[in-house]
Each structure stands twice: as C-alpha cells, then as structure tokens.
Length: 353
Image (cartoon, rainbow, N blue to C red; front, side, top):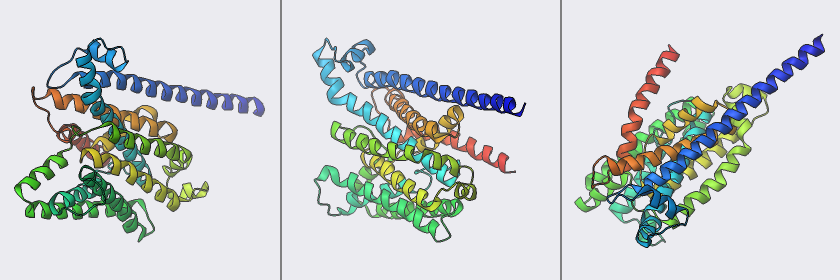
C-alpha cells in the first residue's frame, strides 16, 4: 500500500515538474517570437518610416531595394540589435541581484551601479581623464570601470557585517547617493558644452550603436549566461534563505561574490555604450517571475528575454512618441518603470504589514 502511494506521489511530482518545464519553454518561445516581431518594427520605425515587409526581407537577406538594404544594415539594424543585447544584459543582471539580495526592489540602477558608471563617464567628459584608448572608447571604458568599482564597493560594504542581504542593499543605497553627489559636483563645474554631453549621456541613447559595440555586449552575455546557469540550483536554494542554503551545501559568500562579478560585467558593458537606462533591470525579472516562477533555470533566461523585449519596445516608442524626433530611451524606460516601481513598493509594504 505504501509502495503504491509512493509511486502515485512520485508520479504526481514528475507530472507537475514536467508541466512547469513545458510552461517555461512555452514562455521563452513566446518571448523570442515577440522579440523577432519587435526587432522588425524597431528597424522599420524612425524619422523615415520603412515598409515592414521590405524590412523583413532585408533582415532575412532577401532585399529588393538597395537603398532600404543600406539603411537597414548600416544604421537601424545595429541600433535594434544593441537594444536587444543591452536589454538582455540589464534584465539578467537585475534578476541575479534580486535573487542574491532577496529584495524585489533591487537592480543595478536602484543600488548605485549605474550611477557609478555615469560618474565614470562624466569624469572623461568634464576632466578629460587620460585613457590609453581612442577618444570614442574612453567614455565607455571609464563607465565600465566605475560600474565594476561600484559593484565591488557594494560587496565590500556589505562584507563588513557578514555580507547579509540587508547590509548589501544599504551599501548599494549609500553608493547611489555618493555617486549622485559626485556627479552633481561635476555638472556644477562643467562647461556648457560638457554639461550638455553629460545630460544627453545620462538620458541614455542607442544612436551611437555599432556592430563592434554589439559584438562586445554579445560576448559578455555569451560568457555570463553559462556561468549563471551553472549556479542555477545554488541561486534557487538561496531564495530559501542564507541558513537553509548553507544547510544544502551552498557556499553563500562565494556565490554572492561570483554573482556580483557577473553583475558588474553585465551592467558595465550595457551602460558603457548606451548611457544610463533605468528600470529595465527592475521590471523584466518581475515579469519573468510571474510567468515562470523562482526556478533560476527558467527565471534567468526569461529575465534576459523580457529585458530585451522591454528595451526594444522602448526603442520603438522613443521614435514614435514625437514624430520627426527621437526621445532619449532612458526617459521612455523611466516613464514605464516608475509606475511599476511604485506598485512594487506598495505591494511589498502590504506583504510586510
């Protein structure tokens, strides 16, 4: 009798697991299909609208008009692909940060990593900090460096009290205000020309995207995602709490250190090339979590897919909100993200009380 119950119970668990796995695959496939559609519309929209069928043929290498082919491949396709890659990097980094800090409001934007990148870029713009790189690459390099330093600073401050999630969050908030203050100081002493460049960079823009920058972001994603998936079960165990994760054999401090290294690389390379773009890393993981659950094997890829989709849709909106003009994409993502952030705060407060 007990053997029969055990078999039924085992079969039930296997059936539930198989159903969840199918749901994860269906969500990811639907997200990828939406990405393909969004990509085509992103390439088609702009100051000069292009026919969607012609754009689709050009993307597939079946172009019949050389002019459209040149516009698509030289100008618009790099921008559209960079939007996907940057969105994936931000969504993935936000998903990891929310997991390791066990905080639904955590992201590289809200915890100071993006602010650090903005300060690094402003240093080059205002002070002309010497870099052993050509001029176009100096700002991205310094932004990447300070994003990594900010991430290391968050971990170092949190480690002073045992790297608990609460201390890491407080460390991130402290660095956020520090870098914002330093950035305000640079803006105060900047020339009008430098100030205009800083403000434009902080708004976020995809207009300087190129194929070479795209390959760098893709290379970082290609290295980061397998590393994260290798730690997927450890990250899932971490959602149970530090003590339970340690009981399951997870080296929690070392896991957080690896995760922060990946976060710094993903955020740094994303912000370095397109400027500060907020709330994608906050919103995308929550959308993924609502659809695929907490299992990191599904949550991490889904966070990347939804981050890419959100930024691609924001890119389309930035070119259609004001006909004949392109609104900085950081403004669009903030307009989307702020209401969602307020909803999360209210939801978290209700859950707490």
